[in-house]
Length: 224
Image (tube, rainbow, N blue to C red; front, side, top):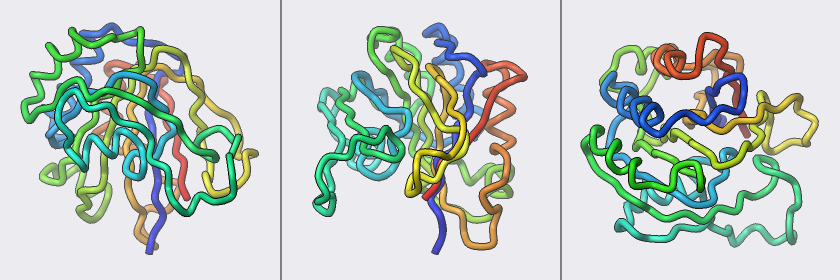
């Protein structure tokens, strides 16, 4: 048993990093052993609140490993039988459609792939397979290994609102939201009795993102 959580880190303002800077952020996450490859580069219409593993195009790119050029769309679940849900994500469904532009094992190959992407014109994401549990700092934080800890770096064409603290199975009165354009999101499962929902961001991850997002970077999470 446990609770699935999607945690994010972003600049305090909805800032879009320059293409090369965004690429360096993604490469550094792999180089410093925060994440493990393979990576996938997506471009199109993305939702920063989509569940990274379940139904999202990020999850499909990570787990299904489709060929480059494949168009991915948000999956519809057969048990969603109550009709259209107009609530915004994460309380309601995400509607994504994106192309898989590139994928690979070598982190440095992300840089030329990004230069060829419609960066700034469409939503872009670099999706990594999972956190690197060969890194003691990562293992110490999560307390157990789980390869379902997908991580995505988002660069959005337009700002999207990310709740600072929300139960996506609850109502929409969970507090303030933060408009984001560049952010890093990762997912993990709290084992009962481990960490709870009040733990801060992963220190090894926050140390790197602070170089790009500044010392006042903001973190938050949704769970349910």
